[in-house]
View 1: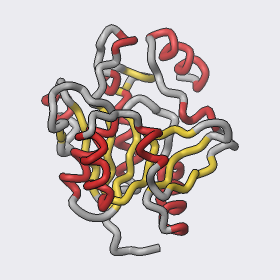
View 2: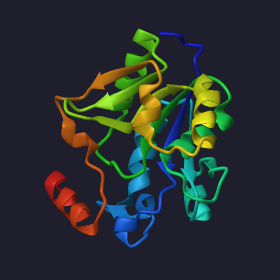
View 3: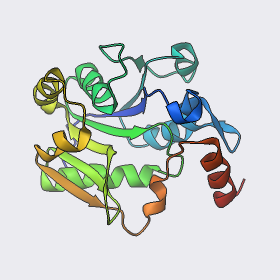
View 4: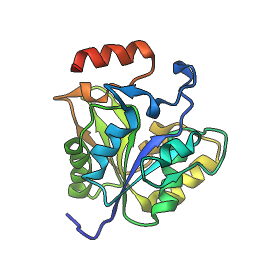
Length: 198
């Protein structure tokens, strides 16, 4: 593995969470801690630097002591806009991307994405649960910035469509697909807390 490749961890917290009454998902408590804190804990052991992509509640995110970057536009353009902003921040190396609302994803899972990308020299390693891709879990070359910029400039937003245009490697997490459970409602939050035990 290329030890010269700088890894920037990016936690995506830029969405509107319309299904959760527009609450900021990263700041909602899961088992007594803000959900984003689980992502930070996973990232900090793997990435050379961790940043948070957020478009609101910036002071609350800055309180975690990490750089907080916002999208170039204020129109909440989705995960790819956050990835592009992070690429501009990182300049070189590899981005390791995960969302702020998947508290079951741990450092080992993130390492697996990085290894899969490095071993195949793919442009992007994307998480795959045996049935479908989870395109917000990525290890991605920062050098894809021009391609991503052009894609977003053309008015497109769909992550899967852009990924299909890249040299990707599917990273197999079929043994534990449950780690990708993300939380879209307070009901799901309570159910997941009960499932993993408080």
